[in-house]
Length: 295
Image (tube, rainbow, N blue to C red; front, side, top):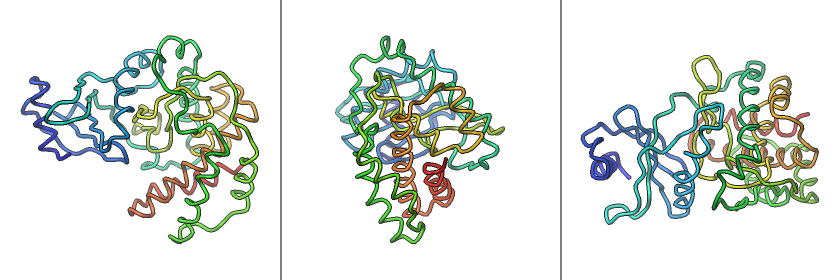
């Protein structure tokens, strides 16, 4: 999807935006994002596997957003498949901010941010919200709350990091993954989770506080451990304590699952960053691996 093609599609489906300037904003594994008229962020799926996530975002985000203490994208323009583009796409008011991974504040400067994240997750994981807004959501389709599944998918990432010369093997990492192979998935009541809450999807304002949470293509029902992984990948020490104080008690089995997923997501991000020359993301992801195995 090019900016010109996006402009043509958006103008045809939403005449009030016809002629508005369109510029590339971001691209990930699953979606390409364009800024339209300096105010609207439009998401287009890049591959078929992402279409179900786009459909879930359109259906769920408007129902969830009013209950959350931080901004999230709320689809204002939604288009179904057409002859010009075979998949759905949508646009929401742009949430200004920079990725936590891009800003990379020192761990000791993340305490206030961590408290905001804890409060956000407490609201998102409210069972009443799941009862009211979770219709049609799948249950943990990628097995992110299952420590054994996530551990088995992490070893190849670690091997790649070694080959790339950006990471040396760490006994603490090996021990965490070995322990995960014998742990069952947490068996708590499933709640609505973001599903892919890592350091690229938390936006910061110029003061280093939370500005919003983006990229909800993996929203689903799952154990809270799926989102609590950010407590162990993105925060350490006093900051992590602040997040958990704002969130509430986390049982040992849930903590273990969250740590394994934190390591898996951090290693995945580190491999991608090292392969594509993203120095800031690489530094943050490697730090996330260290945080995941730290006390």
